[in-house]
Image (cartoon, rainbow, N blue to C red; front, side):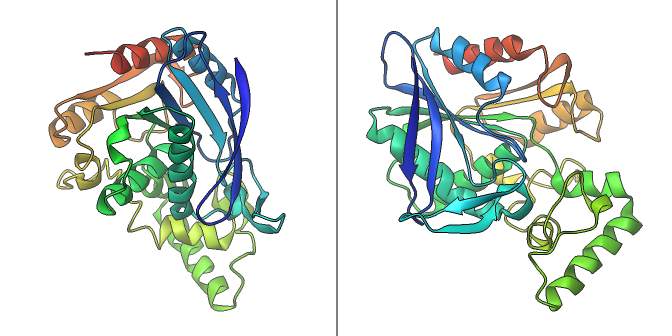
Length: 293
């Protein structure tokens, strides 16, 4: 069964998502947070939902305020503000999106929650979970596991894609435009893989202290944000994912660095960042993790 769910956040933003429910109701659910320039209507979401529903676990995929390329954030009462979509979003605001989704699912009777993120959605979950834990969030114990699909090192990947000289040039340009109060302007076309505002660019590549925790290149980094997740942790990549390092070496490295006693980490062969044509394989591995006793 599929149902559209509207919910309001504590900062008065209204979001909507799709609740996939199994034939036999239980109090267990996966909440899915999509990645950059994405949405809750992906084929992967439908396949994961269908397979997970077979195990009597519900699945909720919603459009966070970073959905699609550009959008207006709708506030209570109908006010629209141009600060949504991957062009304009502030990733730190994902805290409200994820917390609001958790609260809504608890309101609907789901007391066992698995948080699943894809790509930038992983970054949002790690940041939000750490913040919720720091704030002693009243419903923290309802979160039973964290599922990270294709966590990306945003900063190192950008340096690799552009080259360090061009990276520094683009960052300098963004700072210059900020000084002219032009933060809503777009960066040059060749600065990023899709259009992006100065505001968002600076969040990713200068004002990134709170989200720069996927430091796969840093052999001395303690991965404190990931190690702050003490509940079961599932991490996967596609064999052809957006990873600079050798994937086998990275997984070996993270198995040493991440101290979670219920860490399940690996990759899926013959697929990409979006798990194309391997969605059922991903679902099988995820279900096995969720249902383990």
